[in-house]
Image (cartoon, helix red, strand yellow):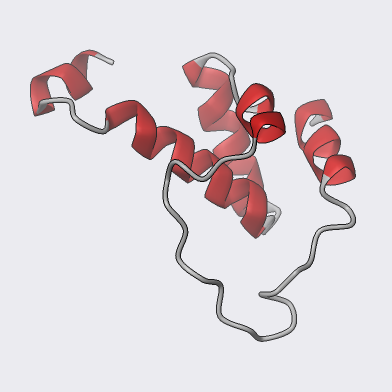
Length: 85
């Protein structure tokens, strides 16, 4: 929970385009800020827990960050390499 609150506090002043009914522009999975990259640099089980919590709490920005991170982890790997991860 501490990690989620830390992320929320850091992003408290961010524009919330989704809340205003605007479509979010598609971003590259590589488009992660240095602060977010450092924040999400955790062990895989912790990353999964943060992802599930962000989904449950409906924190779209954090959920997107987790999904981008997971996508980057499996990008370019074979199915067998993904299974071993």
